[in-house]
Length: 400
Image (cartoon, rainbow, N blue to C red; front, side):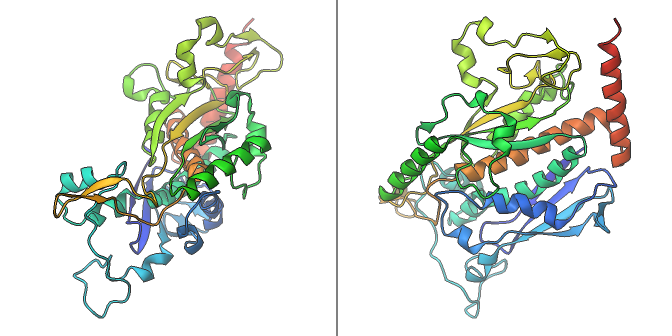
């Protein structure tokens, strides 16, 4: 069973992630994880926090001499901004000799954030007790876990990328027309991750306009997984359907409000003849099933909760970030009087960064499904089971 847990607050000492279930023998170094952590910190419209943090995961356990041991992997990502928060985020009762600002209690919840609901649930007078963990800073730990999953998928030939499809209404006309090759060919330091330069320029204008207005802007991105074999997931139980698991994983990302597979919501307004993907015999397959091809991939690589050999394509919609420089109306919970919402240091737009987090979550779910399907305590066992499965499918389709 593959799983991970994260811990840590936005301005605490560090983020921690524990990963369990990675088979032994997977080559892995801190540099393999650093690539994705660096990509997450990029993006036009990011705030000052990204100029402070230079995220790098320190491997604490589970790896020896550059290979996984099959035991739990523990990673730690230091928060460089911690030195400025030693007093306000002290684990023990703070004393006067602790450096860092002595920040007043947060009592004016931000509409759209977890401040109010979390404060009521956990009975906290200072809403910082909620917002520190509810912060999207936690996604750095997810990206680290996803980088490990991505590395495992790479040994099965499965690759994952993303591209931004919409920011503030500046949108790609047909996201499904964007190929994996186009999305993956963008430079790793691309700040918009949009394949259309004209649309990217319009996205920049939308972000600049929001910043000038003291506002924020959201959008959407698509994650594409390439060379995914058929048969991951299952149709037999509701909680084993892979499309449902992918949707939950992406919906769990901060500020994601909608998830679609393939056509997504557009499938509801089209006739079936313009939704379902025909199956045709072909010498050169479009996906991972020998002898068969799909002229279209409107299903996003999933049918009946099971991968069908085509690219897995998942779209997520991100709402605008909750912290506004011109804050919305709120209430001060200490006096119950009307007051402007709290302002925390924040981004104007984080859609390109969210796309990298989306890659991590899709990679994680696919790695989990691959291990369920092929098993193995070692990477060698995994390879052998996968090769046998591919051979079985090839034989099944060539009986004639």
